[in-house]
Each structure stands twice: as structure tokens, then as C-alpha cells.
Length: 107
Length: 107
DNA sequence: CGAATATGCAACTAAAAGGTTGCATATTTG
DNA sequence: CAAATATGCAACCTTTTAGTTGCATATTCG
Image (cartoon, rainbow over all chains, first blue to last red; front, top):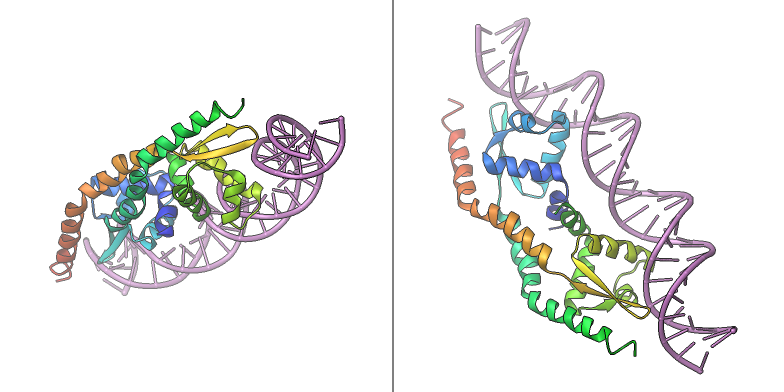
């Protein structure tokens, strides 16, 4: 899970995910066209995405195809985002209470 | 949005969010008790969380209360996770196609 | 087979991030 | 007012990260 958050932290990697979102199963060279960076740089980014299981590589001959894996994002959404979203209303009321607490205190 | 992803990338910062999730509106010193790190270190982390608007500070006298702001997480969920979740089925079928493509190719 | 294509691996550099120490500032309290 | 409390700011160090260059390896194609 930490690997997923770390992987998502970099804009280039998010761009790669977006690119695969546009067209899934692209080769390394195809992905290189959209990002101005050396192939080796992109390989590194893809390596992290793969380690985080956000992208699944698939060899076909000498080509390496890259496919999105939505599972980790789903997990993050469920175990993290939703959990905090659930606390949304409470958080807001807490904040409001905090603001209210401002007035009576500095009497 | 980049700031949010960057802020979420660090385990200590996620721990801080979790801590605030347990009890919202904690002061800096309160938060320090749960994480073994100097106060100044935590201040830095909180600074990033605040800059990413994930946490909203509120001064009450000499104390600084910290409140969760669920809005950025909601945005990420909507603009990022859901977008990719929508492609979930397509991604899986793509991957399957890719796997199928493996067989006929190396004839 | 030899050339071209697609990718991997390792070393290196520059910049950023995580964390610490030391001191300054503001607020409360006796 | 002085002491204690709560926090901020800046310099510094160490580790990680992003990215490059250079070369090696595997697959396809003529």
C-alpha cells in the first residue's frame, strides 16, 4: 500500500497511468513518445508502477506490453478515501465547533 | 492536486491523518505523542498536509488545533480513482486480450 | 548470419525529502 | 513581571529520488 502511494506521488508516473488509460497495453517505446525523458528514465518509473502492482507487464516477443491494474486503486479508495469520506460530515462539524470555540475562549 | 499526492506519499503523514481521524482537532503537542519524532519534524509534515489542504489549522491562544479537511481526498477519489475504476472492466478485458495475443503470435 | 529494433542493467549526478539540533517568539499562569 | 508552555524558523546532515549516459542482451527481419 505504501508502494502505491509512493508510486502515485510522481507526476510523470501519473502521466504514464493516464497514457495507459487512453490506450491500454502500450509498449515501452510507445509510452516514451508521450513523455520527454529518456527511455531509461521511463523504465524506472514503470518499474515502480509495476512494483506497486498498478501496472502489469506482459512480454510479447521482444516487446513489453503494459497494462493497467485497477485493483490497488480500488483498495486505496476503499480502505482510505472512503474511510475519510465517511468522516466528512463529522470533520466539518468538528471544524465548526473549533471555530465556535474561538469566540468564548479569549474572553 | 500534486501536493495532495505528495502529502499522502509519506507513512508518517498518513499516520498523522489517521490520528486526526481518531480524534479531530488535536494540537501539535498532542500529535507528537503518537509519533516518535521531534516536534519540529512533525511540524514539517503538518506543514505539507496543510499546504495540500488536507489539514486545516486553527489557532486558539497559543495552541494550534488541527482539523481534517476531507475535500481534497474527495476530489482525488472523483477525478482519479473513479476514473480509473470505471476503466476496471475494460482494463481486465484488455489484459485478457493481451494474454490471448501471446498464444497466436509466437507461431 | 548480420543489421535493426526493443529492452535491461549499472554507475553516476543533482536535487529533494526526512529528520535533527539550536534558538527565537508568543501566550498563559503564578 | 517571571517562569512555563506551545509553537515557529533556520541551518545542517543523510538518504532517497529523478534523471542521465553508456553499454549489454534478446528478438525480429532481410
